[in-house]
Image (cartoon, rainbow, N blue to C red; front, top):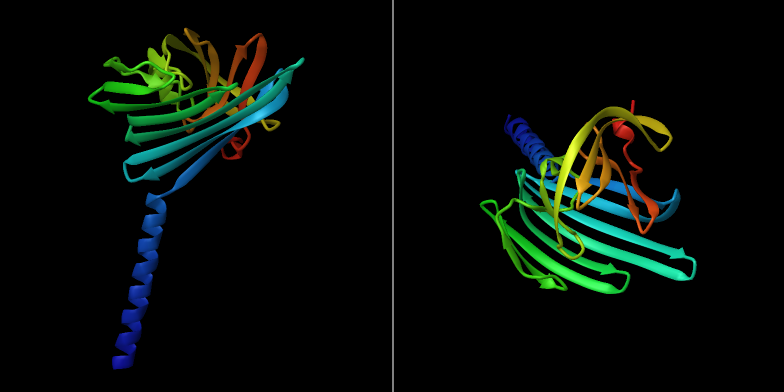
Length: 222
């Protein structure tokens, strides 16, 4: 009898341990969004957005790297950014960027809708306009009228309109998407999937067509 009780106790403890591990695994679930960067249809780099969820908080790390030669000129862009979120509220942003040999770093911290920003290569700024960095991975950015550059923190005034829903080609398959057009100080075409995450953005830079296209959105396709 004692052996039977002991066996059941040990089994229950092991089951509880596995259940606890499952809860921890769910609490720290992560997601990675991978983008291919194209210039006039030719690959020139990548962007990786890694999202780590912990209860109501979220940490997002962004890594972007592009290298391209145009005639005799070589253009290089290397950007890292970390965003801390509490629910839907942005708490802080840290960035480091090498924009073709010019280096920038800055930090922004938020409290009660206001933020303070300072760093290397950028001007110190305090504002209470609810601005976010130009962080396009999340569809909520389309509701913002004030943004600022992820490179040098230059402030932007924008407006974004919803064009409608359509099927977007991702990895040679049709994917349902919501299309927006951002205008003003920043001009972008934006497509978001049913999960509210970016599928594609298109814009022009120095006269060239630039596209960031998701390459891992198979789960959204049907």
